[in-house]
Amino acid sequence: MGTHWSVLIDGPVSDPTVQSCLQAAVDEIDSQMSTWTPESTLMRLNRAPLDIWVHLPDRLLTVLEAGLAISRQTDGAFEMNMGDAVRAWGFGPDPLDLQAIRAANAAQRVPATTALELDRANGRARKSAPLALDLSGIAKGYGVDRLAETARDLGLDHALCTIDGEVRAIGPRRDGRPWAVAIETPDDSTLGRHSILELEDMAVATSGDYRHFVTVGTARLSHTMDPRRGAPLVAAPASVTVLSRSCMMADAMATALMVMGDTKGPDFAADHAISALFLLRSPGETTAVGTGAFAWSGDSAGQVVSPGPP
Image (cartoon, rainbow, N blue to C red; front, side, top):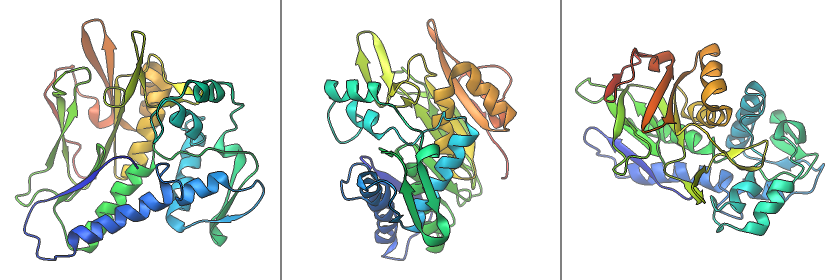
């Protein structure tokens, strides 16, 4: 999916197949859900004729089903039918293309919730309208969950699994301390830490505009797409970090809350008991708004957030 994965293991590793097993877990997700691979199962679904059932593997169906549910829950703030816009703006395998951007902006975009039908019992899906499905806002989180499940199956009880900044902790460290994960300060040239999150059998995902972005004039445009415009978000939070037991859910909800913005996003997170940290730009500084485990008193950098046992 155009990025890298890692698993940090605290303790000895005696099984020589550990790395190959973890790589196989990632390869399976990539082969099914990547937009960087033309022959992935997802891309074949995008090219499939309308109104024809297409058989899909169970893992891809799981992610599509979750994506549709989150899209409904967030009233379309999370939207999977954005692949044309993502590629046009250069956030996929292709360079930025002005003609493709104009086409994406002008497209009559049909939500995936309207045009995609899943039949889990028979392992298949069909489209009633053209779709350019892109799972970059949820599949990486699911990939981290698969890394964690695979590591557990291999007997690894103290590990930290990551794909492109999405993180899930397996247990604590061997000495019983939680894993320490830094939340970066946007716009800091050294990407210093804003705060520290202590993780144990939990996952965290961050969506932001300070790592993957394009600059148009003086505006920095995020890689996160606005479903209403078919273009990058404008005046969005600098970043949104979400804590959850499932990295897939944290990944997708961080994307949705970015789209909702700095007012509706925190309100939605608070109303739905979501632990989320919004880092917002204001003149000369970055301010924080937190809900759930992130709702600490004050706004000082270096805060340590310990959500406690799940």
